[in-house]
Length: 296
Image (spheres, rainbow, N blue to C red):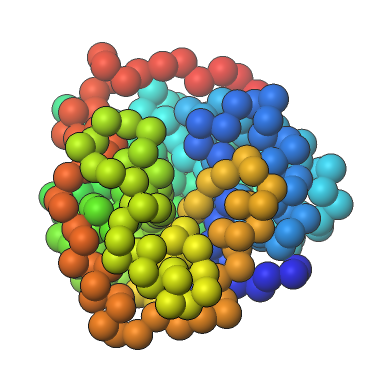
C-alpha cells in the first residue's frame, strides 16, 4: 500500500480503513477498471450497494486485483425493496453472490423507510441474524436521522456500527453527528467532498472552489479535496470519496501528510449551510423509490 490511511475501530471491535473507495453512479462497464486501480494504489475498503447495480463488477475487480480477500473491507447496502426479515436474508445472498464472497464485512440498510418502519425493523433484525451467524462482520444503517435511530434502537438489540450519511462542508448534519456519537455509532460520510453540490442543483457553488477551502489547500500544499477528506479524518469520521480518474483516485487517498489546526477545522465547520443535496429521508417510500434488485 503506497498511501496507508488510518483505521477506525467499530464499537464491537472490528477495524476498517477510515477511507473507502466509493462506486456510487459508476457505470458497471467502468467499475472494474476503476476499482482495480483503487486497490492498486492502496485502498483497502470498497463501498458499493445493491441499488448501484455494480456489485458484480466490484467482485470482479477484487479478483483481478490480486489483493487477498481478507485484506479488503467490503461494504454494501440492502435496498428498500428487499426490506422485511426473509427478503433481507435473501438480499444478503444476492449481494454475496454478485460480489463472489462468502462473508460481507459491513452490510447496512440503505435508507430508513418511515412509511413502513415495520419493514425497516424486520430488515435490521435480519442483519442481526446474519451477524450472529458470522455471514457479516458488522451491520449498520445509512441515511438514518436521529428519530429513525431512536425508533430502531427501541425495537432491536444490536446498535448499528455505522450510519452512512451525507456530510460535507456545506452540509454537516450536526444533529445526526451528535446522535451517532451518543450511541457509539461511527459516522461515515457519503459525498464527503460535496460532490452532490456540483452535479445537482442544490443552490451551492462547488465546495472545490470555496475560498476558505482553497485557501487552506494552498496553505498546506494540498488540493481542496484533500483538505476536506483530512477534515473528516481528524474529526473521527469515515469517508467514502469516489472518482474514476486515476490521478484523483490516488489523490483522495494521499491525505496523511499534513494536519489541520483546530481553528482550520472550525473554519470548515462554519461553512455549513444546512441545505441537503440528497433526497429528504422522510420522502423515501416504496412507491417512489422501490426498484427490483436482480438475483445474483
